[in-house]
Amino acid sequence: MAKFESVDEVHQKRKELSDEYEGKLPEYLENYFDEEENKIRKDEFFRQRHQNKYKYTSEEKGKFIEEQDEKFWEENEFEIVKKKKTVRDEIDLKYEEPLRNEEILEEEVGLSEETKKILIAICEHDLYLFAIRYFAHYLKKPSSKLHTFLYKTIIREFSKSRKKGFKIAVAAPRSNAKTSIVSCIFPLWCIVYNKKNFIIITSDTAGQASDYLSDIKRELEFNALLLRDFPHIIGKGPTWKIDEIITNNHIKVLALGTGSKIRGRKFGVYRPDLLIFDDLENSDMVRSESDREFIRFQWFDKDVIHAGGEEGTCTDMLAVGTILGKDALLSAMIDPAQYPDWKGYRFQAVINFSDSDLWGEWENLYKDRFDENRQETALKFFEEHKEEMLKDTEVLWPEGDPYYGLMINKISNFSSFNSEKQNQPLDPSKILILHEELRFENFVTNPRILEILRNPANPRYGALDPSLGKKAGSGDYSCISTIVRDLKTGLLLVIHIDLKRRKVDDQIEAILKSHARFKYTLFTIETNAFQLVVADNLRKISKRQGLYVPIKEIDNFRDKKLRFESIVPLMKDGTIIFDSNLYNTNQQYRLGIEQITTFTGEGDRHDDAFDAVEMSVRIASERQFKRRTKQNR
Image 1 (cartoon, rainbow, N blue to C red):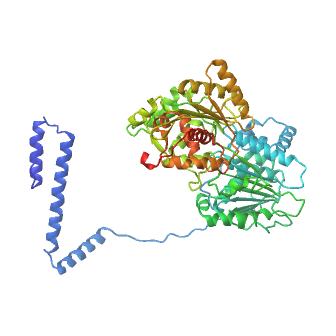
Image 2: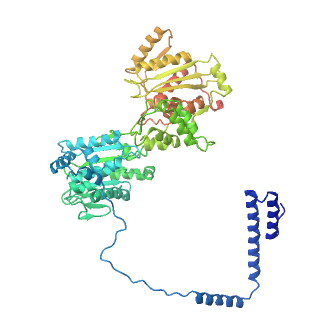
Image 3: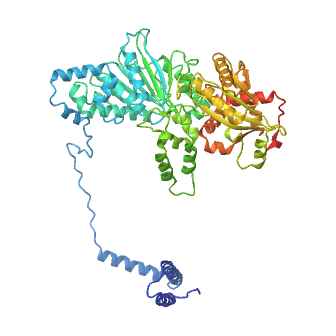
């Protein structure tokens, strides 16, 4: 359309078109005419303002302002009065904390005093009963294996006739309600039953530790059941600060941040007799080498460890948290080689992963950028195949941290999942080979790869890293890897990774199935210790079935990390190739790649895939294998 010169022109054109559209313009035309009219009015406004700027003299402008001021004050009269200050005897509370556990009081109205005393006495010797009786508002979901472990471990230690305190470190997944038990319920149990005299709660910052103490204070003030059963203890004590309290039964609880002085502190004649460490480090501390060294070697080793009293007194130390890095203090505390006088435990959110390939399809749906409702689509797919996708899976806390949510965490940020949920943080500087350093090709669509796979002259090699699985679905993984060697180029194609927890008989059955499918030129089995039984049984069964698997036994006495390092150059230069199609669609293949790309040689829990691939490559190398370089890419 032509450019409009005035608002009238816009109105005229709007009317003409409106008549053509029978009085109702389309929305986009209405918007167009509105914008044009606004542009013209805006231009006219600024044009007029510019003209007025030079139209009047400064004297005229000043006179106009004075007249307007006089007119304003004639029409608007005010009197500003300062409000009188009133001093009240009592300050009205804006918020009053409600009492907790009142419903249990109502349920126990008919109980006799004798019965109540029995219940109080029972809870003194059972932390779990104490927790579910007095803190039902915290424990709204069934206990996990972690929670049960904490309850039982604390009770077991307190039940002993001891001359020495315990030192226990627990690595637990994030968001698994560990703090509610360790930094709230446990100290309150010690307070109301007079089990400790001086408790120190330490976290990565003093503010965080004070938050934990605030929870304790609220329970002491507003827990109705505690108020009834322990009236002589409950309520504000003589000292009631943000970071320090002294209860009515003369027990001190102190909140400190990591790095604060602990050694030498006293409460009257008492040294600290319970030290609770809840998430001592944060991500910034773990990333900084100087912070790590100070926290561990200067503060923890020289200050904290010596915080207790003389020989024969029981100073208990309980540390819980999530391992944020391989060099984190908690990682060292659960390692008996570094802290032999500590008992260390590691818990993982996922205990057993699914072997179902449907998770690969689900991931593709969840990450489909062209589907606006991809999360709903993926959830629907999961609900339709829930039984198969959850088969043989096991999580630490099904009700509070279910498998489906954990898989979302895993595909969203694998590194974070390993650290926050599995307590296996990845240190890229120590990993032998990173995922991005592997060579991937699509074995289904790549013509060059297909030519290699279809050539019957190219030998196929297999290897088993066995496990002593007494029952399926538990214990360590066993892994069968299969590679094809291209006789022309020397390339090694990893065409199959079968990674499962299974019994010995099932491992043999899996080898026979793989041999029937791939026709191995040679198959190798590690025969250290019990694994020799697997090789012997495989020979007998394969002969009985007429399959005759060509077996080569290997004794792996060489250091595992050195063995794995021997094939890393072949992975980095592209001689060993992995299948991108299987990685995206086959759960076992993906788990195998994850084991390979997270291996450090320092306390790795699973290295079965790396072991099997290394053995496959080794027997292929012994048959005039010729290494290639980056020209293969």
